[in-house]
Length: 186
Ligand SMILES: CC(C)(COP(=O)(O)OP(=O)(O)OC[C@H]1O[C@@H](n2cnc3c(N)ncnc32)[C@H](O)[C@@H]1OP(=O)(O)O)[C@@H](O)C(=O)NCCC(=O)NCCS
Image (cartoon, rainbow, N blue to C red):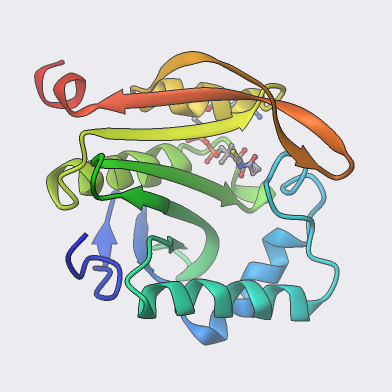
């Protein structure tokens, strides 16, 4: 991954701008990350204080600085508001494989926004990062996430049994992926 994350570009979709997260974004991050419905199936715990969001924002910006994969801020063009995050959370140059993750404010669920953001992330992954495989995992009960990934062309590959230990429980995760050959050749 040359300098892709240290110079993470600004991308645009019909309704959204994807831009690097900035230090002052912590308040907008807190607005969605403190919602228990948003955090129900995420790998991170619901944010209880604004400090939790400051820590997350610092974590993300540090990762950019180290050229490590990290999310874009998802900005709604019509309001110029940060409504979520989406993008690569890991990438392995040797295997040309990357993983995406995403979350969006509840008031904006089901408007097609994350479909736009995930499709743009996949386009970036294949065209710019030159990945061969883009994957995502989601909680086996996270229907919204499963359907979103399928809508974006990812194939269900199976259940990763008791794959993560979150909030005191082992959870089964669904594995999804799209390959470069499928993306470019259909
Ligand atoms: C999962 C999530 C990102 C979806 O974002 P979104 O912007 O609402 O998704 P979209 O509007 O683009 O929907 C895409 C498809 O996903 C499915 N979907 C989205 N929300 C759904 C819901 N609540 N119930 C069932 N299906 C849903 C639908 O098939 C939808 O397509 P359709 O509207 O044409 O039927 C959002 O619900 C969210 O932030 N959830 C909390 C965080 C989270 O769970 N992140 C994933 C961790 S792996």
